[in-house]
Amino acid sequence: MLYENPAGMKPTVADSATVHKDAKIIGNVYIGDNVYIGPNAVIRADEPCLEGSIEGIVVESGVFIQDGVIIHALNGTLVRIGKRATLAHETVVIGPCDVGENCFIGFKSLVFKAILGKGVVVQHQALVEWVSIREAKEVPAMATILTPKDASELKPVSGDSTILSDQVRCANSINGGSQQ
Image (tube, rainbow, N blue to C red):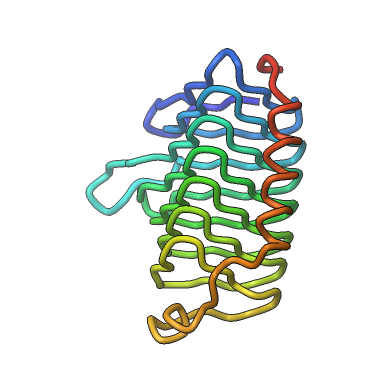
């Protein structure tokens, strides 16, 4: 379901996007081409900053958002989900946040006020907060990445994670369709 925010801003959804009927998209949100949004996902750009503006949420083309994902533009901040990124079940992304192209964020992970470079893999149940992670790095399952030092010590994405990302992208391309 699509809802306007208190400022009267409404989501914009590309015709080729598929939005499950039980997903909620609120406010200044742009959903690009061939995006899939699963059941019970919540994408909220409804909370203004102190000055009253709402930068919003941009979900670029080919993104795969699974069941129960929450994306929230906290205090009117900008959240960008880059092309062909995958947010697995019950992932939470809170802005300001920039998720690069081809990123994978695993089940029940939290990304808060962070920047993920292109191809970053965040394994399941990890916490990434207040950091910038260079491209093609991997956050281990259940890791806590809170400082620049933590981020600098991350290893490159492993071959297994690359295979996983390719499989998810393949599944994403199968899920193309029209908005529901």
